[in-house]
Image 1 (cartoon, rainbow, N blue to C red):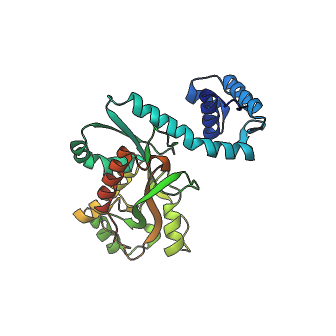
Image 2: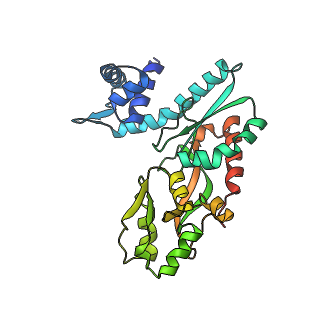
Image 3: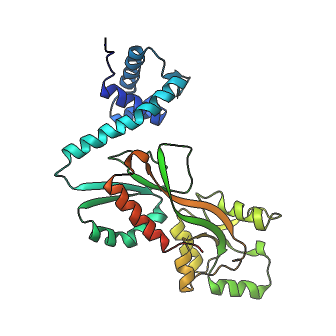
Length: 297
């Protein structure tokens, strides 16, 4: 006798709870109550005869069996969603959503968006500018730009550009600083408030005896940090290739340019099951061409 399969609705609840690691967050995403999510999971566990989650005091955790089951059904769930979208969306305008941090959106993507739109006017492109790491899910977020790889074998990572670090400042600021004969610690330092790693990384390599400086100016986005340095307000950490345009224009210089720390790479990320989608191929080729213009030699 053929064993009855779980319903797609129950599997979707399980998939969401497993991704979110929380019945409460799963309920918010699915517009259900947490008790409804918990009930659906109980139904699935009873039907399968397997415990899928460990219920801890204030959290949940996939069991070994639950983790394997989630990994096995993820691809199938994605394929069903995509097949349905293709079927019902034949006569609808095609859309794709890309998530990346605000600076990448504003500096790298938006200036080149008209070229993409001109070549592919049948696509609706949505850019989500946010620092928060989002779940890649068809129909919500299709691709993302990220600074590091996760330990996920279901995602494809396409290198866009290497990232390196060295401080930058306005040429006039540097000339005045040199004339005073002051030391490195006497700079007026500018920092990105959400960044806790870059100054530490660079200092540990090239100024190991220095402690993290007292930052005179702290800003919450890198566009503002770069602009503050252009205005001559102090020494900022330069993320390459993000500062390359201002250096090329002569608005910024890298006074310690021989002291460069490697800081990983930026990647375009998308689910492997989507790698043959036309929309993913179009965005991938476009982004690679955009970032090639900023490649650090």
